[in-house]
Amino acid sequence: MSLYISSIASGSNGNCYYIGNEHEAVLVDAGISCRETERRMTRLGLTMRKVKAIFISHEHTDHTKGVEFISRKFRIPVYITAKTHSYSRLKLEPQLVKHFSIKSPVHIGELSIHAFPKRHDASEPHSFTIKENGVTIGVLTDIGTACEHVVKNLRQCHAAFLEANYDETMLENGNYPLHLKRRIRSDDGHLSNRQALNLFLNFRSPDMTLLILSHLSANNNTPQLVQDLFTKHANGVRIVVASRYEETEVFYVTNSDTQTLIPKT
Image (cartoon, rainbow, N blue to C red; front, top):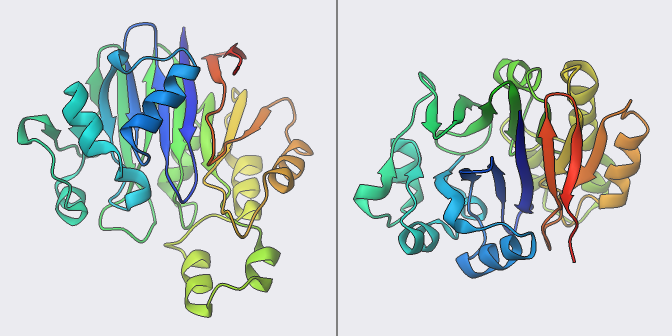
């Protein structure tokens, strides 16, 4: 069986990830405008009509900026924890709000979405795996440290969006104030390139075929640095770096292979 996945946007200016099958899809986070989300999806041949739910990982605006308008325009339910909803101050239509918990997966058609807690400086942050018929996709971003929940879920993934936020040397030598550097490096901050690589090397599934490195810092990282670092250790896994400025290709992920479905024009 197979799933189609794409990073619509990834970075501190906005995050949105598409995962779906032939009939239905979900967005994990909606951190860019409705208009730009539609524009990027259209370039890929994707349609909002297939999107049956939006899952919100936490309340930071780079994950929620577009959700109110997208949900209202297309009548899409928003799955969000009660605490995250409260802290986000999102003005969502009550009938479109669905609160989730880690106790049971949410079923959207044939898709099964599993939430799990993570370390990040938000009220109640979660990451997700999306499963269908033996194929598992992970969305693992905005992570301060690789806790047991992250490790357990990464081990199941055939493909994953994994945070590689900053290069440690660039952050140390950069012009961020000390308090911000400490926040980023903390266990409730973000994963460095080195931390992400260690997670990938030690805990990836033997069935993984695609890793999409995500949520890169604009000031403390470069796509080429991340690409070069991970490619040296890929061992057959396809390495893609997601951009804050444009969408990735759509990838067709099975339990044994990954292919590019639609090249960008």
